Each structure stands twice: as structure tokens, then as C-alpha cells.
Image (cartoon, rainbow over all chains, first blue to last red; front, side, top):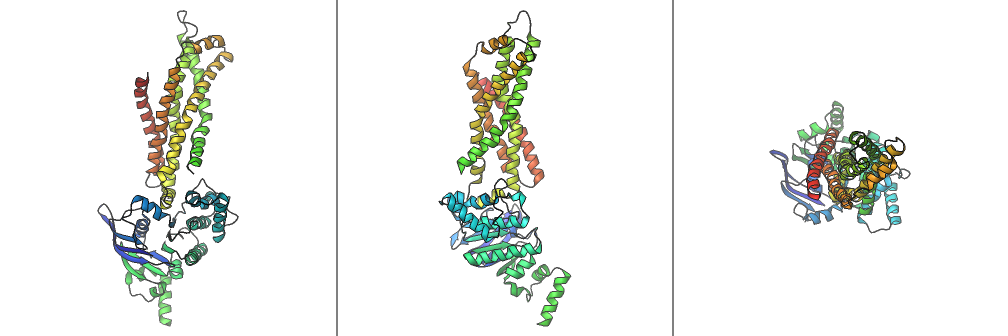
Length: 254
Length: 220
């Protein structure tokens, strides 16, 4: 479980995150949603330590991440996995080497065991057969799946995903969503996904935090969204006429 | 993992530069020899002068300083653009998230690899320059090979070889660390990576030229 308490983040005079307090639960796909520029990525970068919060606390199962020493943060990060918007695979390494990389760095397994573990992870994301290809030779969806395989190779307790569906077609997005959801349950991880994909919100949103202009505007589950009276949330979720009509029709039928 | 990176960087930055170093050194050695022979030749000058000056120029300046200036362009832009691209595509962030000291993992092997391979490049360059000079003697018949050999062996001071290697170690550090700094600290996109690469080459070239003056004064 990750608990965020009164988190603020400013860049110079500009306050990007304002008093964010929330809980990201174990074994659930926690979604952070909001418009572009609302502060979602800044929030996730604060959670993983790529940015230092201006004030506030981030507690990983009670451990205060913000005030940890550099060495403690390094150890803590070994319990984290992250999937970047761009996948961030290492260009010079093959798919298999990318997945083996965290194992090479941190595990005491033999080469044969590391390779087997990496192949198991690739099998989990249905990428067996692509292990000898380079990131530049595979599609965007496959790159995202390699990034997932790499992120789970060390069995992390916390998984962070920064817009994992960006640039993917709807069908591939659904595959990625299902994969993240099933992996979260399988390994009982605390998964935090930063997204503005509405299919993800309605499909796998077990705990949704809506960020609006840097503050937490709303929190709930996907089932609550349909009946929410929060205008900022409904304006964001049901932005298109088609979705507005669908919502009106569903509410009318109820 | 560190040793694997170290060997890889030595190959990528050093071994892959041997071709261009040998090629340039051969022709510069030949040209220096021709110029010396044609421009200094006089009845008052000993016949070994062209060989002697070719050796001194190659050893004292070209193989250490000028060759490092050339490598600042090749290796420097390579390092800055590689690290810059890794930065803008979040590969460095990915390393940090994994709990890896990205600067140490990415930059240290480059610096140590360059420091290790540089003396070999200096020696290869000097040898190839002398090979170029022999080329002018055997193929171009500018002078007799015996005269050239006489000049190359005349009044040889072994310290000059060490001086050349010591200077090249300083330059190797500049060539690898300055572009690494520019690449690692890039912010933005591909335009910024290109700018960082150019700035890295310009800065390291200027630093090499300045430090060459001081090192030559200090070591002579």
C-alpha cells in the first residue's frame, strides 16, 4: 500500500501539485486520471523519486520514502517496477537482454536461471519468439509488453505505469490493460497507472483518482463515475457528444 | 556488469577509432615528411632533417594533441548523442528507477575505457605516421629510406614518448567526460540532443587546445 499525505510540488513559482492525499491499495489497479498538464506525470515521478516533493509524505507500507537516505531509496527502488510512456527499452540490448537486465544487476541467480526467469516473463506477456529482436525491430505494443516483462522480472511490490496505452490502437490498449490487471492480481502488487484512456478507466479502474489543476478533485471506482455529480469529472470523462449521449441513455434506462 | 560495459566502451570508443586514426596518421606522416623535405632542404642542412622533424612532430604534437582533437569530434559526438538520446527517451530514468546509479553505470566505463585505450592509439598513430613517411621514401622517392631512417633515429629522447602518452591521458579524460556531461544533462528533445552534441565537441576541443599549451609547458 502506498499512502500519500499532503503532497505539494512546485517548480519555481508554479505550484503543480497541491495538497494531494490518497491511498493506493495492494492488489488493485489504481488509476490516476486527468487532463494533459494537470500534474499526473509529476505525481507519479514524485512517487518513484524522480522528483523531490516540496512538502508532504509518501509512505510505502509505512516507510517514509521522501525522508529516506539515498542508500535507502536505492534499496527501496528495487521493490519498484516502472513502465514509461515511451517504454524506455535499452536500444543496444535485445528483448531478452532488456528483460534480463534487472536480474543481471541485482539477482544472485546463475545465467541459466536468469535467462529462464526472463523467458518466463516474456511468456507471461506473450512475447516468446521475439527474444532476439532489438527494440527498434518490434511494434509499439510489443515494446510496451517488453517493458512490462522487464518491470515484473524482479517481482516488484509496486508497479508504476506512465500512460502505458499512449500511441496504441484500441485493441492493443485492451491487451495491455488486461495484462496489467491480471499481473496486479497475480502478484498482489500495488499498481498505479497514469492514463487518460477512457477504456482503461471504465475497464480496470478499481481505484481512480481524478487530478484537476494539480489537486485531487475526485476519488472512487469506475462504477461510481456514471452517477457522479462532479461536473469537472463528468466533463472530462464524457467529453465527446457520443459519450455524453451514451451516459444519458444509460442513466435514463436505469 | 561493470567489466562488461568497460570492455564494450573500449571497443566502441577506442577499437572502432583505430581505422580513422591509422588512416589520418599515415597521410599526415607522409605529408609532413614531404613538406619538410621540400621546404627545409638546403646544402647547409643535414640530410636527416626531414626524418627527424617528422618524428618529432608526430610524437610531440600530432599523435597526442591533434589526434585527440579529431577524436573529440568522433568520440565526443558519439558519447553526447548516445547519452542525450538515452536521457530524452527516459532510458536513464529507467536505470534510476531500478536503483542503479546511472551516471556511474553509463559514464565511468566510458572514461576508464578511453583512458585505457588512448596510449595504444597514440603509439599506433606515431607508428603509422612514420609508416607514411616511409611511404614517401619508398613509393614517392622524395628521399632515400636510409636518410629517413637516419633522421628517425637521430637524437631520440624516450621521455617524448611518455610525454605524448601523459598528454593523451588528460585529453582522453576531456574527450570522454565533457561530452558525457553534456549528454547526461540534456533536457528536451532531439534538437537539444543535437545541440548538446555540437556543444560537447566545441567545448572539449577548446579544452584540449588550452590544456595542450599548459601540459606542453609543464612537461617539456
